[in-house]
Picture 1 (cartoon, rainbow, N blue to C red):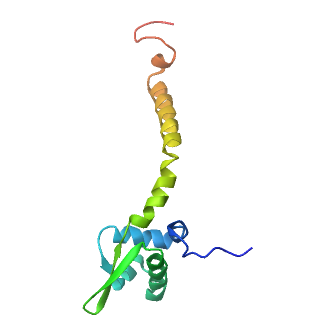
Picture 2: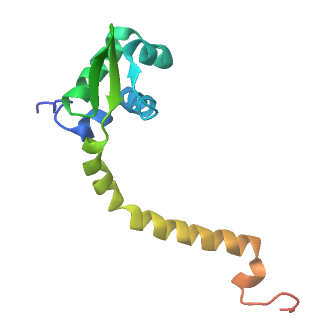
Picture 3: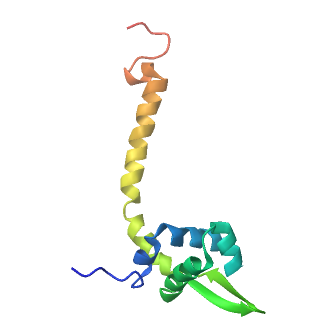
Length: 121
């Protein structure tokens, strides 16, 4: 079975942790490649390779500023990821509500048993 190309869409592109790190850095504003290299602590060719993938799916845009190439985030291709993940939000919220109930019962065992403070069982 052939392996899917990493440049087909944003889902594939952000599956790689270094690319997510790059997006995190660019979320704070545009940066030239050398700043990304310094922040990530990996060789420039590797950063450029990841930037190429991110650029091909439209997650980053590049423009020249003097002699530098400055990359900036374009979050629009992340929308399908957000829409997909959002479907699971209700499940997470239901589980967090249950966890809140358990924590409340652990902190206030009298409430869990239906007793009120000051009552003896």
